Length: 96
Image (tube, rainbow, N blue to C red; front, side):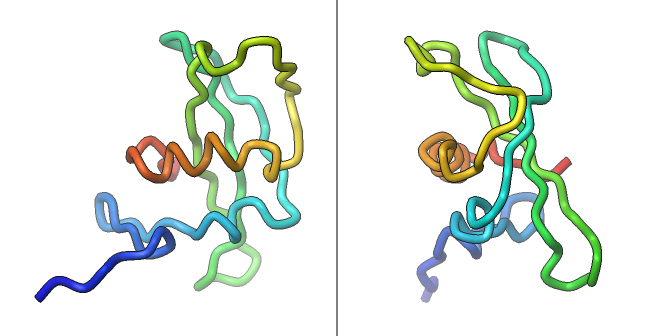
């Protein structure tokens, strides 16, 4: 019998992804690059297992979703929660 997996337990390529709360709480995102009609942002999250280590993750934002919005080079991660949730669900939130 399979157990239900929560967002913090999603395992893609044997990498445990953080929960949305761990990603956005008191954190910032930083613009990385633009490619294939997507803005790409990075976010750093403290490692749960290694003291003082930050893990960097990246996620895309489709240009079609940016109508009328201003996207800064750095901003509060909470403002990007919608895009991070989408990336977690469709597998495009990945560790770099």
